[in-house]
Length: 151
Image (cartoon, rainbow, N blue to C red; front, side):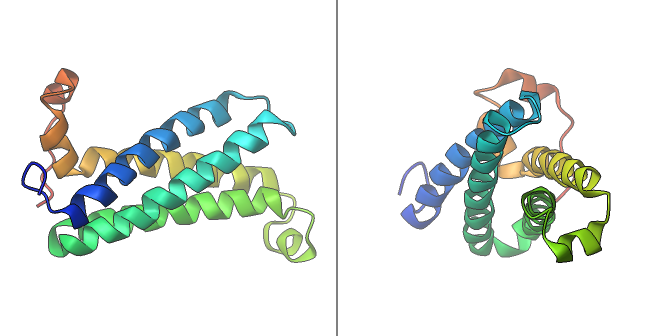
């Protein structure tokens, strides 16, 4: 046990936090790059892979505290689904079935999916009461945030 946490919870938690930081950094880098082939595409791929790790570790962690963390699974599923949908709309935009599905709105679907995935990611970060409780002594500005009423 480390700080009262079992190894089966602590190790996925460390991976989850590192992947979360990577998701935030790569998301910001992707949003600030020119929207053309090159760095935007590479950082976007890194964002999706980091988000994948966050989503998988969310499932692992939430199962261990199931009734309390069920809302995080919902937020994780919505955010990851939006990221996959936005990425797929751009990545497979020339495929016939995608053109039939989104029509001429491929860029709008891509932007909507990726931006909403980032917003949902930050929302899940805010609603994670375990993270809030553990980080308030490390990050003093978190003391100023109102506490969530999610149990």
